[in-house]
Structure formats: C-alpha cells, structure tokens
Image: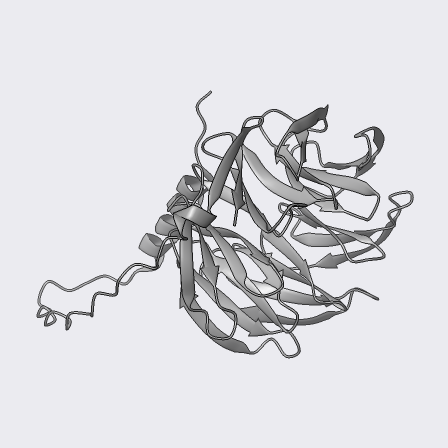
Length: 332
C-alpha cells in the first residue's frame, strides 16, 4: 500500500507558501559575499551498545501514537484501524482491537484507553484490563490527539481547530475552546492544557478548570509534539529541526535547541528529555537545563510517537515507527 509521509505533505504546503510570499529579486543585485564557515561539531555519542537493547515489535500499518497504562503499551495503527496492546515487561503482543477509522491519538485515564479516530470523527473508549470496547463518542472534525488531565478528557480536532473537553464517565461534552490551525500535540502541566498549533507555528495555553485561553506563544516551524518537565514546556518543531523550551508559568521562550531532522514525539522521563526524529530515524536524549544532546539511539523507520520509562523491568524508551510498521522498545 503506497502512502505519503506526513513530512512530504507538510513540506509541500510550506514550500508553496514560501514561494508565494517571496519578493521578486532584481537581476541587477550584486551577489552577497559567502558566509563565514561554521565550525563542524562532532555528532552526539551513540548510547553505549553494552547497555542498549533494541526490540522491534511488528504492529499494524502506519503506527503513530503510543500510551502506557501502567503495565502495557498501546499503539494506534492508523491504516489498519486498530490498536495493539503490548506487555511492557517483555514486549509480547497481547491483543489487537479494532477501533474507528484512522486512529492517531491515545490517552489513558487510569482505567481506560481513549483512541482518537481522525476520519470517523469519534473517540473509542477501551477497558485497559482486557481491551473491551466500552463506548464510542462523537468528537469534532478530525480528532487527532487526546489527553487525560486527571479529571477530564481533552481532544484536539485537527480540522476543527479546537479543543473539546469531555467527561470520561459518559463522554458528555463539557466545553469547546478555539485554538490555532491544525492542533496536534497536547500536554498538561498540572493546571493547564498546552496544544501545539502545527500550521500557526504557535502553542496555546488553556486553563483546564474552565477552558479559559491564557496565552498563545510563538515557537518554531511546524510544532508537532509537546511535553511538560515539571517546570517547562518543550515543543518539537518539525520543519525547524529544533525543540523550543518555554516557561510553563509565563510562556516565555527560554531557548531553542537543534535536534535531528523532523522532530515529532517528545517525552520527559523524570530526569531528561527524549525526542523522536522522524527524518533521521533516531531518538535523542537532551539535558533539560541547557538542551544539550547527551546521546543518540537508533529507532525504526519514521518514528512519530514516543514514550519513556514504560518498562516494568527497567528504564525503556518506546517509539512508534510509521515507516516500518513497528514499535521499538529501546532498553537502557
């Protein structure tokens, strides 16, 4: 089955807009002098091989999202219209459950797994203990990400350009909040929901208690994933090959740091930050105080979703690899 990657589609849109807005260049302009050469920095070290184990696990077509339920890792395979449940301790596939059309987002509410189905415009609620489908609820247009804030479920509607707040017991709609264009990643800082607006190059901060918008802040090009480290919010910028660090209290930009090509998923493991680079087929470990890249590890083809610290037997990083139809457990 032939399919185009998200990077190809978004890059085409971005190039079209740049060409359309670029000013005409006069032929009489003199050429600029060549820039001074930049110093060549050594690549970050690969994680030491004796302590690194890689376990690829075959799943459905086009895996994008991952979530951990305390015992198992769940992966949404968008072109197979199902989710796969994997035992976190050994990486064994335990079950595959059909859901809606194009599942691309996952969240865990303490008892159930929520699946955002992009094309069927709904949410599937699964019992985490056995994968039984408990209910299907209507969402907005193009639900693509879902988050549990400890009390309620939030869904980002990519086409509707809004967030919806749902009561987890029955899926009742509690509110709708307008955000930027094509909202993707979601994160919760303990009081507020943060959303990455992919087409606006911004993130929006929304108070979870009442849905009040507290601010919208500029980041890099094509913001995709977002994570909270206990004090700061980190955003992966797909087209800038960077991550942006914002103060969660004010939204002030604290730094922008280079990573690999096409950064997507991002996760905080309690000490450091992990970033999945879709174009580089790897993950990077970053120090949170200064954004320094501490190490790089291989991933499968085209990693999108990423979670960290999900193994019951030790620390692990998991990636959902869109290009190779696998989940990779990286044991550290």
